[in-house]
Length: 167
Image (cartoon, rainbow, N blue to C red; front, side):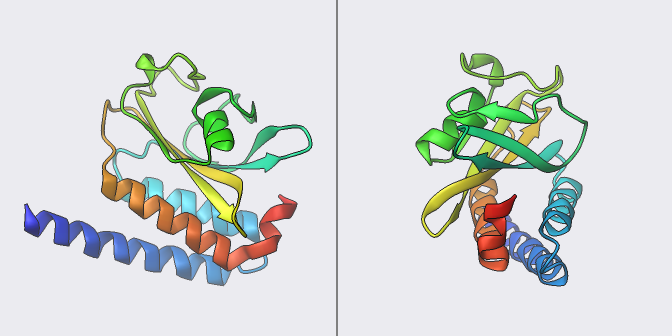
């Protein structure tokens, strides 16, 4: 078990380095960097079937999908409080859902989705968006996945800073 944990840390560290490189290469093109990050995460994890970034419109209390990798979704605008993403916009907390069918406030994006992991993205202490991961498997997400995505959000916030506010 210890070996697996060390391997996971090494693997996640490598992925974070790759994401940091992508972000630095697209320093002024935020959407390009975010899109490439989505694609990299989806490519590297067989249980990440859809990866996307939603950003907040605080005036209208909605989240707006800016980039994603995976099947297209009709859910490009989500009200605060609605669905898993909308709940994270209000709670400012990570939300790991092992089985979306067990959630009353779930917005079905695809008949294939079985679980979801949403991590808020903070800038200057404010939840301005989130990374949303859908999986077609039941209960595939680990604490390590959660920590990796928190680190990704931190890298993104540090790389793009106030540029994220204009998305």
